[in-house]
Image 1 (cartoon, rainbow, N blue to C red):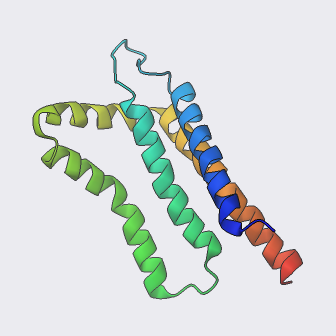
Image 2: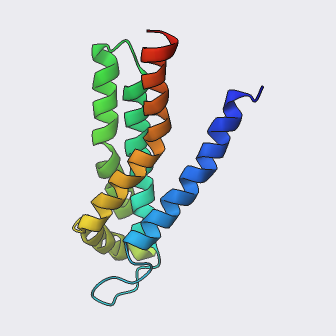
Length: 141
């Protein structure tokens, strides 16, 4: 019998490959619509945010006993993702500080960014959704 972590490991590699492929192909590679070169920054931001959203969604899928504190910290953690990222890039950016400010304003205006994040989140959470549905209906009805 194959240990459960092998399935998780294989799905991690598949999910990582799909995240990179979807992000690079939907957002147009290293060039933006106005001709600027962004050096894959927007694609990496989309992958980062997809992982944050996937993590929080997986926690909400797998938890059975919701308490006030768990919900509070999940919502607080999720809402701090963008402000902490923007703050760290603004204050810790060093020489390229203005570049980060410009890129965040451009990437958050793109509808393809949100589509890419939603699609990657669905791909990352699909095994957990299937497992949870199977567990609730077949394994432990």
